[in-house]
Image 1: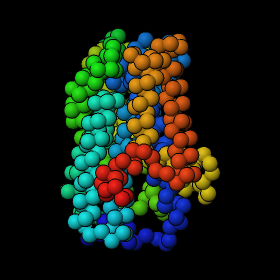
Image 2: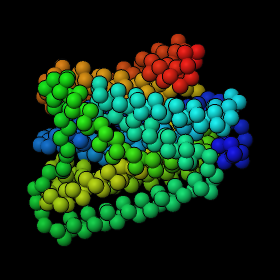
Image 3: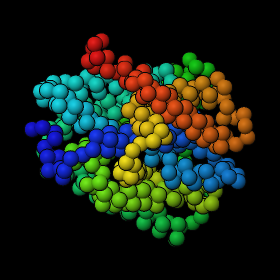
Image 4: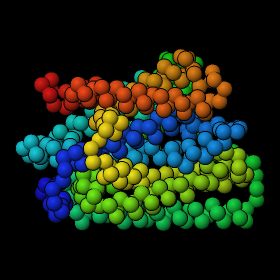
Length: 399
């Protein structure tokens, strides 16, 4: 059965510009959220990146990071990964590939993503997601891609259960705040050895030990990628006008759950809430669980924005161009963190007063640089360098 079977009831033709814009816009904007989270992590050498003794504006920035950024960028990545897997399979089918050939291409692509992920982690950044998504992609290709619409609706049931779980966790946290003892425990963070290493070789050895564990923690994101696959089968981002109500409810509920779930940890990170160690750990767990809903929430927002754009201007065009080169943009960021923020290179995070402010400014500047570079490449009709390498590895030197 074709993976387009679920979309054959589409209501009317879809404009070419609309089909291309929403998914690419989501991927391009996603990289800003990832940049902000990763830069903060590198500056403080912890996961999540947190100034444990914030003052002044840093308190408000901590709140914004925990509400909108930390544990909220990679869920967008995961949703769009699942969405992109269906898009790639459709392109292969449209070119005349058989189901066996489509499966072969997807498996090669995801196996190479695992290789990319290992190299990325070994050379640049411990918090790699490419390897994990490559493994997730292999599982999805073999177990989910050719399933029917009824089977894929299982993921909606799973997400309903996850929402109930977040509500229960939130009730427990609120109950503890009302009736529990106070305290002075900080929000728990995990030190990252490779980010604090004094030299490149030491950091690389640390990353080789950190990558397998980090990859295992990301594998449950298959549920996010599966949700993206379900959405792609229904052409939700290609046809946002036909799914306006769904997108609105997803944006409101998804981001609402993420913001509400992250609020206790955000207030604790700013020093505006004081609890004991047990409550602090539960708040961090609630923050992570709620953050999963930011994935579909943010994607829905980007879909609604794309629906309003009748003709992309230079800004939206460049952002979409970055979305089409998201692998290159993601790897570029890791190079930038190594050069600009590592303690054995420029270490800019400790040179200009507030590390939080400095890290966030650098994150935005690096992301803007990738937007500009992607826009220039798009004008020349050139793919990103990482995309070129990956394509040649999958299809051969003639690709």
